Amino acid sequence: MDNRNELGGTFDTESVLYDKMRPGYVEGLYQTIFDYINIDENSRVIEVGSGTGQATGPVLKKGCELTAVEYGENLSRILKEKFGSYERFSAITSRFEDLELEENAYDLIFSATAFHWIPEETGYPKVFSLLKPGGAFARFANRPHNSKRDPDLAHEIDALYDFYYNDYYDIMPGTKKRFTEDKANEIAMIPSKYGFTDMQYHLFYRERVFDADEYIKLLGTYSDHIAIAEPIRNEFFAKIAKAINEHGGSITISDTLDLELARKPL
Image (cartoon, helix red, strand yellow):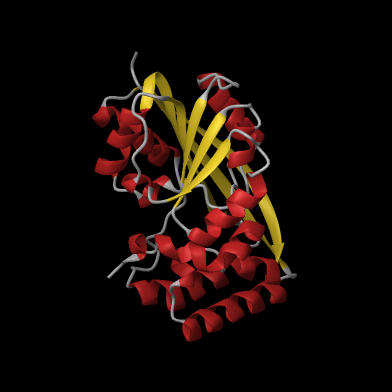
């Protein structure tokens, strides 16, 4: 049975590694948000699922009042250490869905590679209730995928995933697909069911290069990988590292970053 959606709490067990290895987001993504909704020193903002602040800084630097909501205690601690010098920053250690906040009070609510952990029928109505009329919701994520620059390496790693990951989670081989524009459009339209208007989506792209050790550290921050039984995970990771080293010592990851925007009507 594929139970990967139950794994949100595992991030907190690797908080330091998470902070070191998880990437931020591209400048163009933030500029698109700020073109959609003006954020300045008069704005009140909530970040949902802040992690250790991979997406926090560029919004906080607009001078707004920013409340970061993060469920993981260790992640939250690092988040507070990183941004505690900002007078208008606060962090709350809680599940977003459990937290009571002022309604009709916020100009922007955003969530970076986190909102999928919240049930749709809970998350969107809550965001809607907290936003001011005219306020915006920005949901975005990083979707990494092995580059096809080295097809032999990609094929070998795909085979390892079939043997270790897909078998562990009882997933049919070959069912994992690259993130597509159609999927971004599908996500972008979800808010329309909950009263939002002016839905948009935008896609951004980049590549990142890792040596074998760096890549294994990155994989060690993914909840579904952390949850694999340790003996299996160690063997899985060791064989990925071996494959990378046998194919030149580095791996290129192609990222698709999707941004979905929606607005609460005036």
